[in-house]
Amino acid sequence: MFINNGESMTTRKTIVLATPMAENHAKRIVQVLEAKGLKNLRYVSATVNHFNDQEQLPMPSESVRGANVYVVDDLRQGVNGVNPLEAVMRLTILMNALQHAEAHEVSLVVPHLSFSRQDRKAKPREPITAQVVAKMFQICPVFKRLITVEVHADQIQGFYDRPLASISGAVILRDDILDTLTTWDVSTDDVIVVSPDAGGAKRARQFAETLGISTLIGECSKYRSEPGVVASMIYLGPKVAGKTVILYDDMVDTGGTIVSAAELLKEQGASRVIIAAAHGLLSHDKAGTAAHDKLSSAAVDKVFFTDAVDVDSQGDDRYVIVPVGDVLGDVIFETTKQGDGSLTKYC
Image: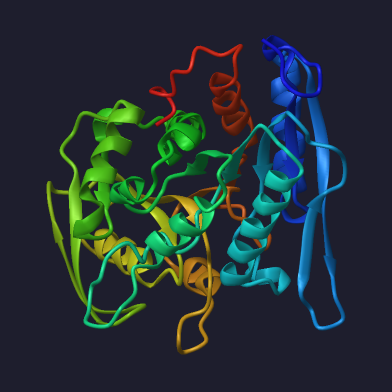
């Protein structure tokens, strides 16, 4: 069987298309795919031109006709002046450009899926923005799949008619955290995994299982007076006195919740506290206090983030930033004809 540009199905090109915001991730992905021997692989850059009125014109810089295209993009570039809403619209337009350029299929590789916290109507008149984003992406008829890291809520998969692969943050962070425990001469039997809020208990349990930690997990129950403001918090779970505690969440935004949880656990006698999260958003709260400032003054021994979102450690040697490119490359390879298609060990 042949496609319209004369290539056989077995030799269809695989293109990793890098937006200007995600070139580092894309280049590492290509290195991984090359090391695995993926055939007919090509790295292509996407250009983003602007009209004088700031309308954007994103497009591939080379032909993508007949190719399986993996678009690597960053939807959170707040530090560079691009807001998530603008980034989602830009990516949707780029997908339209790929459709009209006759790409065979388009897969999105988005390490941080913006708007994932807006997955339900929590209060009257609130939008379900995660559903809106899913509909925008699926307007493109050649959209094949979405690959991301630690989506905020599993039910978001239900907004997509195409496969959504959510790579576990624990899988990415596991080796570095276990290496730290070994350096500290701490057995996993003396580690307790704690969720900083009740909603993350399932995620914390899966994290513990990934790290091979068999002890009971705990959780911190909080009350918010308003978004981003923790008014009170209590700890529920096994005693932490003399234990090493790992606080795990999918993201750290303003840092209020997870820093409050760390301080509470230290007060209850935890010997060491580790903060770990897939996404270090590290924004400012409504009072203007930066998450970095909260973390720098917190009683925390180590902080682990992936680089799904660009994190500046600001010279703090407690930070460990773990690259996601290797795992993204592995996952992409499994979705190609040369892979076996199984993503279980990553998700």
